[in-house]
Length: 429
Image 1 (cartoon, rainbow, N blue to C red):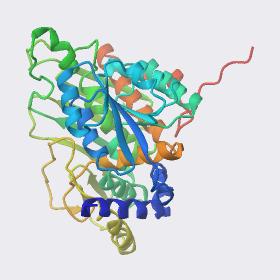
Image 2 (image 1 turned 90 degrees about the vertical axis):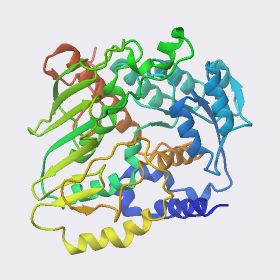
Image 3 (image 1 turned 180 degrees about the horizontal axis):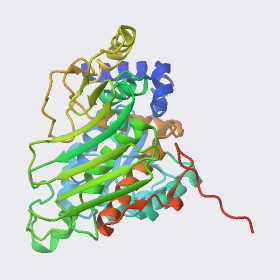
Image 4 (image 1 turned 90 degrees about the horizontal axis):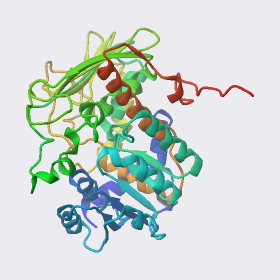
């Protein structure tokens, strides 16, 4: 076993015993039985081993409790790349045949967005635990179907909201929720790029919509489902609220390459108490990069940069000692593998590092480790499905605001019993 694996095992054992941290971040309870599952294995099928799918596979093969036994894709180059990572995996062309394999415990779905819903529903019906990349559905109705099926079947459900397991973000939320930066007044989130990352080489023109699916409206919602869903979830995590209204505008102004999705969007989400979360994304200028700015009365946090900035009064020494003594020891054992996106926010002020150094990971590996643990135990970690559901819903609701040009109220039919929302009650007959 490598030193990295030893460190990972030691880290997860500590995480499973970190009661205070699990209370504040309940989905980390997925690791609570890690000491008792050492000899167990989760047999995984990968549906859609394209660029994202193989990225996830690269982490899974490092987990001794995970065994990739099957891969499924209709595109041979993707299969070829997947077999380089998991050479013993059985190959399927039809995902339904993979789901029929009763030896498979769980599936990872990393297909184009418009394929997610029916694959997830079929996987639940086949008795599989499911990890689905974001957004979980192409529209809000699909997201609700998926969530209800998860609750109906009792199968484990994770989505690709990896910031929930990012140590830097977890510690940032500790600063927020303990009041270290004062009362939170607003949140700004942004994602700026200048690379044409969604336009990929194709072997023939007839393969364009299959390979470059993110660029077409019948397959994707572009910026909102590919980028915004990550950052909107950070805002609701910080405020512990879900917004009441959204308004936005978007356009396709730069990329004249046949794409149909917007290359710039700007939105405002308003909460019941008047606080607002703004979201902006531009795909033709990367200068301002990616960041969430959590703005408090005593300071600010930029979790993607891994920094906090105090206005006048630093956090109480007892709080900093607590953070340094047990959280830094906990997080120092993580083997870094790099974030799944390259941009980083430039520092405007010196500030202080949240985890004692530069932000080097994004939580993807820990998210997958937690999914494997939950699939072995069959126990759904608290709040993880709801956080993934609302991250997708907020992104898709925002997309509707972009399309309509109107201020939209949150639709009652999509509310769950979560945070400040309540499931609509069916009138008695």
